[in-house]
Image (cartoon, rainbow over all chains, first blue to last red; front, side, top):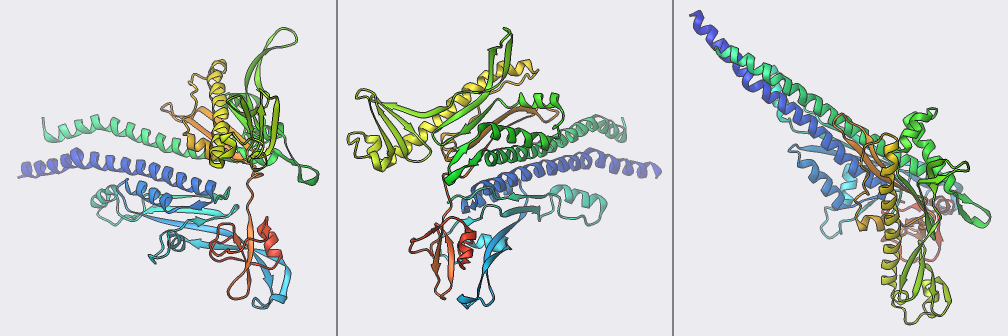
Length: 180
Length: 319
């Protein structure tokens, strides 16, 4: 009786050692490498936006395609902090109330609005570039929304829920130039 | 052998490999991080250099100081790498920068290693400025001296004459010349001439640098970077500084950092803004290429200027 029990135990332990340990190890390494690729692609995209001063639909498409090539699903969040130079009026509809000075205000545009400009919903509107100004701040955050294979295996082993976000990259900076 | 024994044996064999994989991926992450960091340092350095090189005189006349540019470039780089007070580290870093190019309106300077004999007959090797080179193109006995815009000097060697001015101005003086006559061809030739002459000098300087790098104990083989023609032509459009970095070791597996950076001073290409009355009666200022601009009568140079006129930023082009 005890012979059978120890045999079953031995089978379970060796199953773990033979299969699950190497697979888990390999998948974790894969996540690490994916992180490097995502960081690299994000830096490439953000830097080209910072150097050019605009986003074209093609640039965004290529960026998201290169991310999806890693086999995960990502959420891309863009943030554009524009320093807007606004003249000061005490009454905005009255032209004579101009105070002869201006304020520099931060106006923040988020992903939805940027994407709406790049890929308009209205099919008659031509797809356009999104322009940034010199001195603006542009930041991109990328995080995975699916459970990576490594997370799934670990969840199975620990029998508990693990956080979904494994690959999380933030990259941004000041816009260096404006081009047309 | 029992199954548990073989499983343990398997783990003993597999564990070192798993460990090595972990070290390798960690190294890969580290290399990527360093790569991005160094690129940032390099970008900041050329940006500072391009700001420092412009000296504005009376009547907005601009002179270029190449010495100031290089000084600012190295200072920023040293400050970022935290080696401002360390002369040995500075020398070592300098050996990884084979060439710096200062792009001026009508020519360019190359800053690279040179050997010469000193006063006492000793050999001296240091980074030196080469004489300024113009953007020259020669065809059918005519020599064209291009600039970063369409101002050109054409020398007719046979007739010993020269024509100078904007392309539209000298177009009457040279009726048979197809480069001057055809605006599109002129742009192409001009851009190619500028890119080609800088490229060939950069490549020569980098190849030469191998000789000197050995003296600093660098075994890396410096190679001219592979930058496409389009990239060269797109990048060089304004006064600026171009610098190359090669062979900085950044990883355990022999990874090297290779990059180049261009900082433009934004002197020639200006940004323009237009003010126009909107449908609601309020005045708005727009970018040059905004679709809401219909009449371009008066040009403004800056957004601040427009705002002081009381115009609001356009919601469409978001200037």
